[in-house]
Image (cartoon, one colour):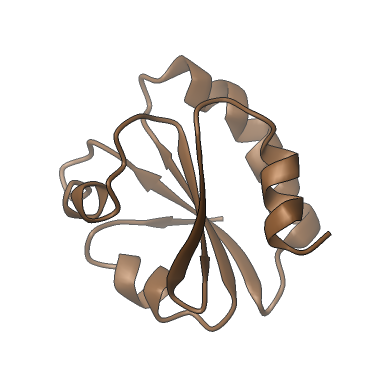
Length: 106
């Protein structure tokens, strides 16, 4: 699973032809750590040439601009992009599997 930052977000997420799930997280965030195993499991099960999963460490020195641009107000936040367009969002520690499967049309 790839980590993205302000400098790589456009190339890895916004210009990707397919579906990208982005996990906005922070090291100090307990709910983020709780959600990580599920996110990793889903990434392993569903990553392909047209679907990828990335992580964006909100609050890191090189990770502040995208938080503002994408209006991320809490973490964890999970965004889904399809062909560079933001199509769905899930804020907080919720049913991540349902979120992913819904956005994969399953």
